[in-house]
Amino acid sequence: MIVISHHQARDMLDAFLLGKKRISVSLDLGLTESDVTLDGDVFMLPGGARISMKDVKKIRDDIKVCYTLIDDIAMKVQFFSDETRKFYKLLPTGAKTPPTMEISGIRMHVTKLMDPLKDTENKIGQIEPIYGKVLDTCTGLGYTAIMCAEHGAEEVVTCEIDENSIHVAEHNPWSSQLFDNKRIRRLSGDVFNLIKKMKNYSFDRVIHDPPSFSLAGLLYSYKFYDQLFRVMKAPSKLYHYTGSPGSKKRGINLATNVAERLKKAGFSNVRPVHYGIACEKV
Image (cartoon, rainbow, N blue to C red):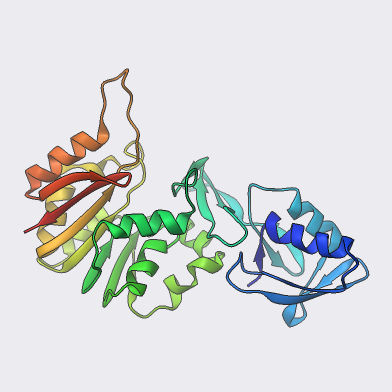
C-alpha cells in the first residue's frame, strides 16, 4: 500500500528540479524509504506502480489530506458516509509522524503542540507500567492499542462502533499493527453495550478515549464508569481522555464532572493529567 502526503510529494519534486533521476523517499508516510526513479514525467515506484508528475504536484499543493494510489491514480484518503452523515479523512501531521483522523472537521488527536504519537505516549504514560490485559474502549486509528501491545501488554481488547474509522485505518500505514499484531483483539460495536458482556476483574489497564461528550454522552455516564470499575482488576489503572472542552459562559467543566462520577463509581486517586483524568481501582 502506497500512501503519501504533501511532504513526500515535495521531496519528489525537489529532486526532479535538481536533475536527479533516482531518489529515496517514503511511500508510507515516513515509516520507511523506497527507491523511486523518474522516467520522463512519471515517477516509477516499487512493485511496478507509477504516479504522474501531475498527480505529484496535486498532492504537494494539498496539505489537508493523505493520498493513496489506486490503479496508478492518486486518490484522497477521505470519504463521506451516508450512514453516519459524517466526513472522514486521513490528515498528515508531518513528514515522519503519524497522521491523524479528522471526522467532520474534528481531529482525533492533540496536534497543535505535538504529533499523534507523542499524544498517545502521554496518555499511556499515565497508567504505566503497561502489562497484562488492556482495554482500549475506542479504537480510532489504533495507535493506543498498538502502543500498549508494544509496551508490554499480553493482550489488548479494542472496541470500535464506527466501521468508517476502521476503513480509514486500513489505508493508514501507521495502523498496520492493528490488523497484524496477534496480541490485539478487535471488537466491533458500541463499547457501552460490549462491556456488559465482559467478565468481572478482567483488565489490568484501561484507556478510555471517547468521542466528544456531544457525540457519545453515554461514555461519560456513571453507568458506564460503573461497568469499567466492574471489569477492572484490583489493583488497576484507568486513563480517561476529556480534552479541554467546556464553556465558562455555561458553567460547564467536563473534567470536574467526570472526576466526580469516577469517584462515585468507586475509583481512587482521581486526578487531572494530560488532557484528561487518571485514577485507580484499589
